[in-house]
Length: 262
Image (cartoon, rainbow, N blue to C red; front, side, top):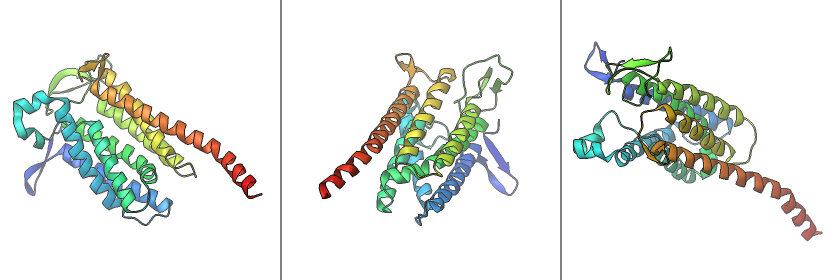
């Protein structure tokens, strides 16, 4: 594992997590810019992604502190600057909130901008997980005897047991989800459809991988991340159901409008 990368021309090593977070932001910006261009939207996609990334980092760190208060009691305020300890759900909530506000400000629309950002979010999340893997920050899985099991003796949170490399599982799942959403976004669909599919797919992926991660169970034998993931799936399913109902009712509304003018 490589928690830090030394540079020959710089006295300080670069944390691999921060480096991959930067790469995730860059790739997310590129994908979102392509989404905007495909939709013929002239807003600054790169700038919006940067604001969203900052909001997501803040949210991920705050949610992690709320989820594991014992770390705050032991380390105090220094836990805020720790390179480890970022919660997916907090980043999702703060990032979505930042996108909504920017979408409204740019007159794109809340649901529309979230649709456009969904493929970028999925791909960026996957790349960010490479940083978790390289730094060995403790988000790996439970012990396993499978051939691809790995140990992280030099990680930020070291382990000498062979465990599931869950960040790599999440990387693969995120890239597949991102590719699917990108293809789906290339055709005209009701606004909110891509967002709904993103919430369902990414929530399902995180819910499943939690079964082999080390996170403690908090309720009904589920971890905090699983409860949040279940909420994501439910929200996405309800959104898709509402969109299908509205789409089905539109022809009836058109007929009624024609009858009134007749």
